[in-house]
Amino acid sequence: MYAILDIETTGGKYNEEGITEIAIYKFDGHQIVDQFCSLVNPERNIQPFVINLTGINNQMLRNAPKFHEVAKRIIEITDNCTIVAHNAQFDNRILSTEFDRLGYPFEKNMLCTVELSKKLIPDLPSYSLGKLVRSLGIPITDRHRAQGDAKATVELFKLLLEKDIEKVIISDTIKKGSKRQLAPKLLDIIEAAPTTIGVYYMHRKNGKIIYVGKSTNIKKRLIQHFTDDNKKSKKIQLEVVSVSYEGTGNNLIAQLKESQEIKKLKPIFNHALKTSIFQSQLYSYMDDNGYVNLRIEKVPMEQEEEKKIITTFTNYQQAKSLLYKITDEFHLCQKLNHLEKTEGACFNHGLKTCHGACIELETPIDYNTRVQKFIEKSSYEFDDMLLIDKGRSIQEHSVILIKNGTYRGYGFFNLNFQINNPEVLKSIINPMENNRDTQHIIQSYLRKNKVQKILKLE
Image (tube, rainbow, N blue to C red):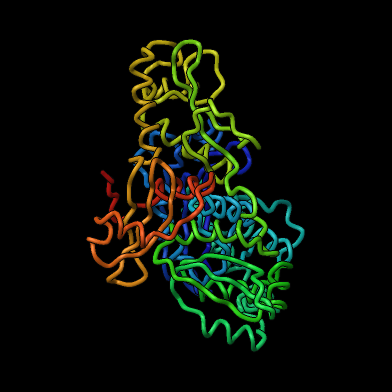
């Protein structure tokens, strides 16, 4: 099964592009069996040359769904499919980057119709999609729009399958999709693993923990570990003899526990979380004209005490994406948020979404009031609170304790009196270390997800 797709983007700097339109046709090798096409709000402005090329402008996308709103449909229609695209490396990079921002690993086998065309139809003057399909007599409409280009790629791929008399395409697809033979010990580990959410620990023969991970489906994640061919996975496959696990009931506790365990145990195959898991931070300061500015920077080795850090991010692109979003949501200024360098009015002022702080038309008091609303929204809702969410069973709930703005730990309960009684609550909380990573994990999670209840403590 193939998912033949095309993506249009905003243009701009490498890995800072946003998707403006996506079209996907699910193709079984003979006919289209499903399809999905949609404009997408990229939460950033489109480059002028792209507007001229595609005809898609910022106004058209204002009410379009954002990527996180169409992500589930993309996952569904591409499930168990090989991705096919013209210049597939580009489309794969754009999709993977968008899913990375959501914290979802989007990993698919890819086929590129540019490369296949060069192999199966050599010596053509051009392999750009428009010129290629025209030279092959394939009709194309709405050039440089996702639906038109994707539909033309479907017809091109049909032709390539017909020309592939040695069946190289199908053979390679089956080979990439098939699982290689697993050692019996790995099959036994997978068989015993649960499908629940939680943290898992890989052990050597002597019991030493060599890797700690978390997953929403531990069994599925172990299958990925034991079938991957990368260097680290192969070493793990040789050394692991058993896997223990701890259910957490929800992804937030899984992330917090994984972070602490890696810092405490320092497993040899965990590299990413031995140090800080966030690379960028958003801070505020007041400029000489009295306006509160927001700015992204790389997290320094030593934090300046007087600097007002609002929140942190895994990477720069994640931070920039949110800053664009809140700039639009709170009618802030791109210039004051350091998203645009200009001597005069910012781009948003021309769209009437910035009220003119960039050229001092709006008073600092009015502007700063809206900035403060964002800052309050981005911090913990209360300094003393409980985050109530799903537990490890239907009857159970999880609880995370924040005291004086500090993460204190987590626990599980069945009855409400357990969290309403301070002494009982204290006894069910597993004390955990508070650090910059835990604050990042909690704030990042609350930005993207809702917990069942936030309970303010008296």
